[in-house]
Image (cartoon, rainbow, N blue to C red; front, side, top):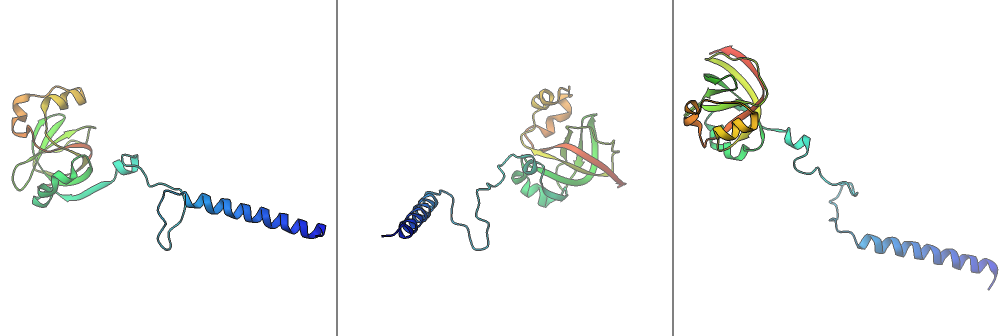
Length: 168
């Protein structure tokens, strides 16, 4: 065996060892095999609760029967609804008219003033089980309990944005 043959054997052995190591490392992967055309990498999908996920609006439309029927699915998520302002309850809260009962809107962040009868478009987080005490503690405000008895235990909107439209 010549020196040249020994070098070839060493190079082949090293190459075989490297290929075998890479092959074994690939067999120990826990992530699934990608479908055709997908990028194979270690990038993980965005975790739930990330800012992009939290700010995604899942409903945009009228406060109507369709919205009411699906409201439970929107709890904890961002929605944009429009409706007619029916009554002011306090500087921090008002109600918008709907096909059945009005919906309570609590201003988490101050939004422009809206007059009764005016159309308003609101964006915020749908919440469930309204409680005067919990909202007072959360926002550091004082509400007149008697004005909110019709809304206790109901879904409501914690509004962060709003804009007034035309007079209804």
